[in-house]
Figure 1 (tube, rainbow, N blue to C red):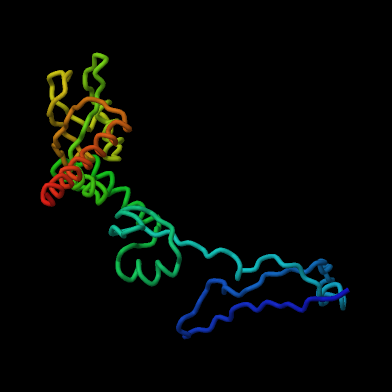
Figure 2: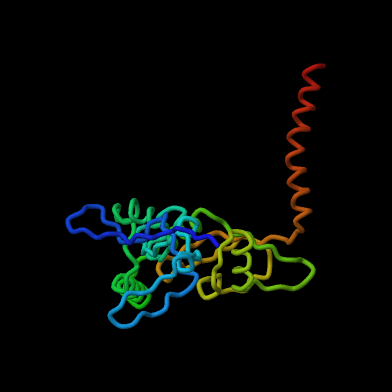
Length: 247
C-alpha cells in the first residue's frame, strides 16, 4: 500500500490586487479520496486513517483538458470567422485580446441577443426604404453584378424554361442557392436558345439583373474536348508559321 501525496490549493482572493483570475488555473489537478471519511460526532474532528485516507483518485486534469470556448456576438464582419450579427464560439484569448478590445464583438448576453433579434425583425418587417443589406448579402450582390448565367437545355425534347430550372443552374454554375420566389425571368415563354435576362432579389432589398444565355446542353466530356481543341488550334498555327519562316 502506497499513498500519493497530492494536494490542491484554492486560489486566495486578495482585495486591491491587479490581474486577479477567478477561473481555474490550467495546471490544477482535481482529486478525491479513494475511501470516504466517516462523519464524526458533533463537535469532534474527523478521524483520518494514517494510510487509507491519504490515497486519492484523479478526477480532472485541467492541463490536458481542451480549452474552454467563449460565445461572442460579432458587431462587424471578421474574415474567416463570421459576418456581423452571428454568434460564434472562439478561444477566450482571441476574444479578450482582439475581438472585444477592438470593438469587433460583444459578449453574447441575453440583452445583446435581444437587441440583435429586434434589429433582424426590423430588417425583415420594416419598410423597403428602411431595410439594410447584410454583409453576406452585399457580397452576393457584388458577385451577381459581375457574373453571367448560362443555362444548358437539351435539344431532343420539348422544354420551357422555368424559375426552378434557373435556380438549379445558379447552384450549378455560380454556387449560389437562390429560391424561386427571388428570381424573375421574362414573361414570354422561353422555348428556344438565345440571349435573355433574369433578375435576382437579395434579402428583399437589392435587385440585380444579369445576362442569361440559354445554350444547347453538352456533356462535360464534350465541353472539355472542345476547349482542348480551341487551345490546340493556336499552337498548330504558330507551328506552321515557324515552318514557313525556316523555308
